[in-house]
Image (cartoon, rainbow, N blue to C red; front, side, top):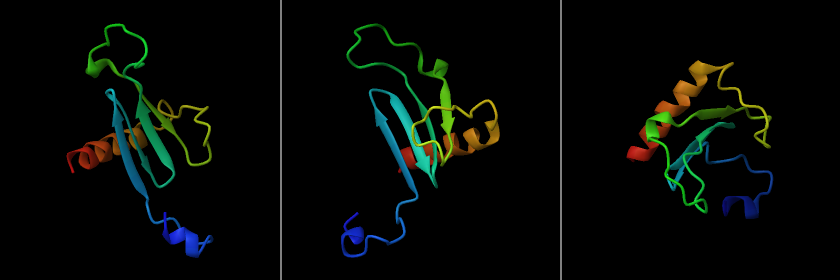
Length: 90
């Protein structure tokens, strides 16, 4: 991010970023976001099995993450899930 201080119009340098927290996980890649919510940390309930998590997909123009595209673009979702595993392994 420091590169943008000297040049506010500089092109984005990070195209991929993954996250994991409390088994909630996701990946951002070239504007697309795939994520899953496994649990809510402040609710003290038993979490479901990780294999039952539902992944959501959001497009580059949906910064509010209001329209889940997972059912409409399953191949893109699988691509991002694969990329998530690669990044998480690193």
